[in-house]
Image (cartoon, rainbow, N blue to C red):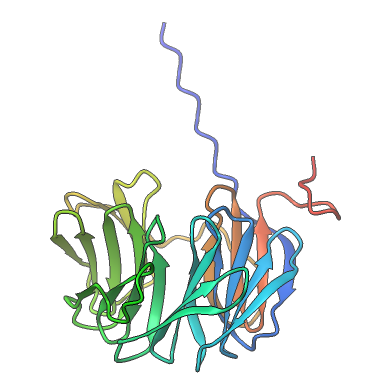
Length: 279
C-alpha cells in the first residue's frame, strides 16, 4: 500500500518587524548582509558606508572616502575586507578593522551600480551605467582591471558571482551568464530592463526581476523559462517612503529593507527583549 507523500510545509516568511535602525546617512541606497548574516552594511547618499550588528542594531564602524553617494557594497568571506561603489565612478577596497581605504579604483565612465567579491575575495567585480563589468585583482597594486566585459548595450544594474560563473542584468533587457573558466557567454533576452539577478541555491537556475513587475526563473543551462511570478504572497508594512533596497539572510528567514534614512530587520518569528527568538 502506497502512503501519500506529506505536503511540503509552506516557507516561513519574514513577516515580523524585529528592529528599526536609524542610520543617519540621509537616504540609504543599499543594505546588505555580510557572508554569515551577523552584520549588515548600509550605503548612504551622504557618501558614507556603515557596518552594523544585526542582532543589536549597533553601529560598529563608519567608512568615508567616496566623493558621492554610495550605491552598493559587499563583504569578504572572512570579514576582513569590504568593497563599495559609488556615483563618483570609483570602486573602493576597505580594511574592515582600521576603516582605511586599501585601494581606490577608477576606470568606469559613469556611476557604478553594483559590486561584489568572488568567493575567495581575490577579485572584485563592478557593474556600471557605462555598460561594462570590470574585474579588479584585490591582491596586486595594479590600478587597471584585469578584465573588462563590455557586451551589454546599456547600463549594468545587477551582478552576482558564484564560483567560476558571473551573472549580470542590464537595462538592455538581457541576462548574461559568463563562464569565466571556459570563456563562454550565454544571453537570455527578457524584453524588459533588468533590475536584479541572482543564482538559485542549487546553482541550476537564474532568477531575475525587471521593470515589468515580473520575476522570472530560468534554467541556467538551456535558458528555458521555468516560471514567471507576479502575484503577491506577502506585503510588509514598511511605511510610506520608497524602499531603496532589500537583502535576504544567507541561511535564515530574515530580511533587510532600507527606506529613507533607516533599515528595518524582519524575521519569521518575533524576538524577546534580548534579541532571542520567542519560543
